[in-house]
Length: 122
Image 1: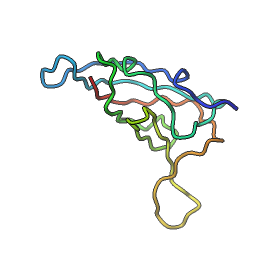
Image 2: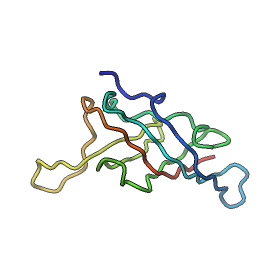
Image 3: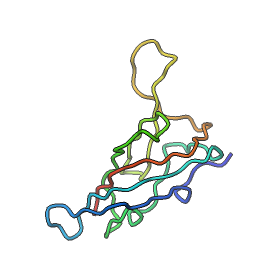
């Protein structure tokens, strides 16, 4: 199966907020939608579209913070700014001891996910 790519990710800007009177700094509320049960999780995370898709005037995203995990299928999400990717992690239920979260494996094809997030950038 092919892996998810940035072209398979839909970003919808729901509100734009300027920060501290800066003409370009933003904290934008967005929804990020991806997954269809057919495309697999790519190595190193789901590549995000360019910063302009998040409503950033200079197309630069510093961080993406998931604010509502209710539609996230029980995964934890972390943004990797250096690679512009969103990691998906889960708890290891087979391990009796508490441990760190594990990145999703590349053979998993996530069902449709829509995340409410705040994108921070300029």
